Length: 165
Image (cartoon, rainbow, N blue to C red; front, side):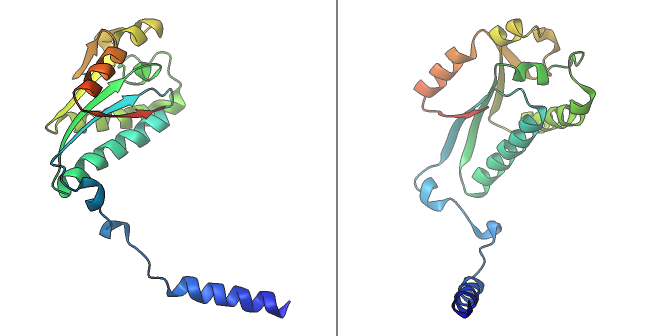
């Protein structure tokens, strides 16, 4: 038993001697070496208002972090699947408990649209399938025929595709 206590104390001392790394001191210099433009398509396909708000915040933070590290963001945000209902101004089918996250998502979308080099699209096929009138999609999000075609095209143009489910 004394051996276990000694081993535990030794491990504790070892861990305590490792300097803590602050997230604010971290950067992405290795990955960004030689990169001046960050071309990315965020392929959003989630039915969770909470998850959408979370990832929109992360997209916003990613944009700002790229700028801080000397990279010009070039972002396209596409919405497909059930996410189209979350970005609609018609919330008839949405539960009341989801409204804070839906409102938060709308606020972040508005903030993102004010930034240069951000373009947003919504899939008309998904809107039709899920009964969302594209006239009720949040202002500034462009309805397109098919976001799969958009994804193919943007990838051919050198954009990284990051899918969020």
